[in-house]
Image (cartoon, each protein chain N blue to C red):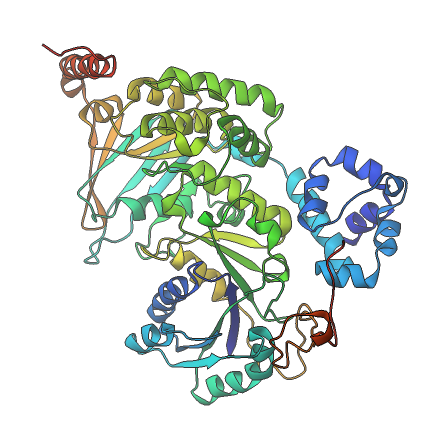
Length: 334
Length: 227
């Protein structure tokens, strides 16, 4: 921790501090510190001196570590956002579960969609984890991941705000007791996006376009249906996530327009890796990785012949969707 | 010997995470032992024994569990050294959320789970706020966005900490956690080291076994709610 940054904070008036760093209010609040009007004129160090030893003991606060913590927080919040300039990732093969070499150098560029197929337990999750951890031959698979053709900075591993990877897991449960609006706003703030309110509008509109059933801002997130939750999460990832790579673990078929969802994510100039066994999604991808026994067994380039099946598959899919909507609207299917 | 203090609220997944991390340590051929501190009872020691991990169990019973921890931790450290362990892990539950077993210079880990609610990071004291590593569990049960929001709340109360998501059931993230902990400092002894934060002070008649309710039975360090 730089002492210059610390003393700068200590000399700042509380009022100034709250204006420049809006997140400081939340920070004080987390430590149980209330800021009263008469405190605003005090410098931060004077304010801390004004707190009695008993009070600090009570709140389990140590003056020095509090200042250091805030300085650390300021530093994190002001970090450059270097996630924006990821043009490509390269995966150099490691070993499968039997110790056989993967023999592969896989280069994936921005805007590409790569599908991952293979039975449960074949090692799809480990592959996704290797990418998220930017493996440097230091995971059980011994894979190596490069970013923009070179060895990546280790900071990717531990950054909370500037994550390399946004993961859309299969699980779309919510446990937090918040409305859609409160939740998306909180997420936008944690992602440090500019103008969070506008972003919340955008997420909300997109989510409703994707979802089969509409929902409103005041809906509790815990009461969203499966399809609505998925729609909300996909819109949220597309709009709020600055991560250059999106990992999708099976977009389920229910209650959501998957093609629209995928196009939305690709449009945002991301690398999309998707574990899926949905034929339509698989044909929308550029490549397919076949995972077997913990290793990437082969890479299939989706060709024109395969893609030629899309119209037929889409027709079947549309038919099913039509029946679903009929059911939802209380009609008979015959 | 390397020494780690791992703490966290009850049922946050400490034992599951430790078991998975030990698996990863064993891949590096390290000798690992565990000291489990608890209040009334624990069966976690059996889980460790089943995996042939040397384990000691300490139950604080009628005493404050964290005070009990401090009084016994040095002896446990010696036990680990005598066994020739490469790494000793102490596991304890910070029950009142005000306590923290963390020791200066000794790698401190706090385990909390995604299900505990968005305001939990605020409510936990030095156990979370002074930890070097915060492990967040049960991420498989909630959505990615919720995991991110929760992690950012943790970041707010402890900006310095390394925050890692670990799944205690599948072990996802445990390998990554083990590579981080692998670089922890070696220690000769704990004697003379200091707690990161003082324990809550209390010594009242109820500490000493008083059970009757009423002003006349209250003696010592007693505090009243604001009326």
